[in-house]
Image 1 (cartoon, rainbow, N blue to C red):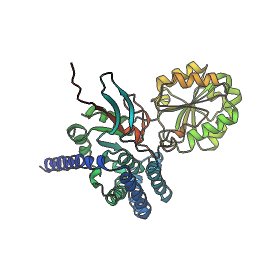
Image 2: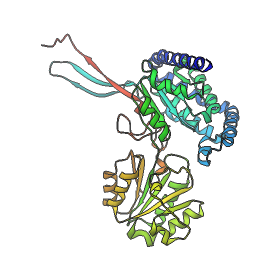
Image 3: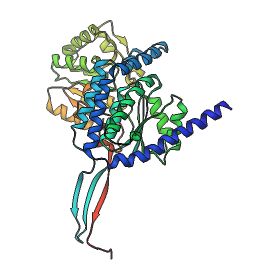
Image 4: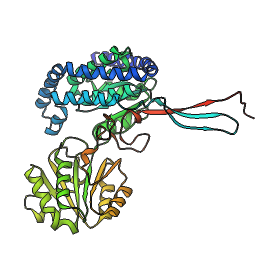
Length: 426
C-alpha cells in the first residue's frame, strides 16, 4: 500500500513540475534578451554570495559518496570548492555575453509570387535534463536554457542531490530578480528512480526533448524508455593518435595533458595510438611522462617490450572509459589502421592527431567521424567553455540535431515566418 501511495505521490509531483514548466516556458519565451541576461547575471551573484552554503551542501554529498565507495573519478566530478563555484558563476556571466540565440533570421528569401519567407530561430520548449555526478551541470544547463528561452526540468544524480538543490536555489533567485517565472528552471525534488521513469514515459505532453548526460546505463535507459526526442551524450572513449611525423616534446606534452589534466571528465584521453615508425623515437618519452605522473599504462605486446611496468592490455581495454589515471596504448601500422581502430572502439566523442604532416592531419580530420576532431591539441579542449559557448550541457555524440558541445545556440530549433500581400494558392 505504501509503495502505491509513493507512486501516486511521484506521479503527481512530476505532473505538477511539467505543467508549471509549460506555463513558465511561455513567460520565458516572451522575456527580452535583456531580461534573460539579467537573470543570469543575478544568478551568478547568488552563486558567489551563497558559495559557503553550496560548499557545505557539497560536503554532505561527498561524505555520503565516500561512504558508498564511489571511485576517485566520481568523487572528483562531485567535489565543489570555492574555485569551482566561482567557475560556475563566471560561466553564467560568459553566457550573458553571447549573442541572443532566439529570434535570429537564419535564412531569408522571396518567392516569385511575392511571398516573403524567413527561417527564424526559436526555443525548443521544455527540456528535461538527466545527468550524473557533476553538480556544476545544474548551473550550466539552467543557464543555457534561460539564455535560449527554454524551460528546464533538472534531474541530477542522487549522489549530488544536496549540491544541486543549493545551486538550483541560486538560479531561481536570479529568475525572480529579473521578473521571470521561477518555474522556468525546476529540479526534481526526489532521488527516487521512479521519477526518472515517469519523466521519460509519461510527460510527452509537457516535455519537448530529453537530454541525458552520463554513462552507458543512463543513456540506454533513456533511449529505451523515452517517449520524446533525445539529444544523446554518451561516454567519452577519446583517442590521441601519435603519427610518425609527430614532434617528440609536443606528443609528450599533449598526451600527458589529454590523459592527466583531469582524468574524470569525458574529454580525457583513454587510448593512445602510435605509429610503429614513431615507437623508438617517441614512445619511451611518453611512457616516462605518464608513469611519473602516476598513470597506469596498459599496452599491447610492442608497448610492453619498451617498458616492463606496462600492464598487458585486453580486448576490453580498447572500449573502456577509465575516468581515472589509466591509459591504454596500442601500436598501429599507419594512419589507416589508427582510423579503423577509432571507428571500431570509439564512442564518437573526441579524437586528436599529433603530427607535423599537414596532409596526414587533413586525412584524419576528414575521415574520423567523431563530434570533435583536433590537430596538435589536447582532447581536454572538448568543452563548451573552451569553444566560447560559456558552458555546455554536454558533448552530443549522436548525429541528429546537435553534435559536439551543446550550448545555447544548439538548444534552439526554427520556424518559418511567411509574409504576404493577400496571395492565394491556385
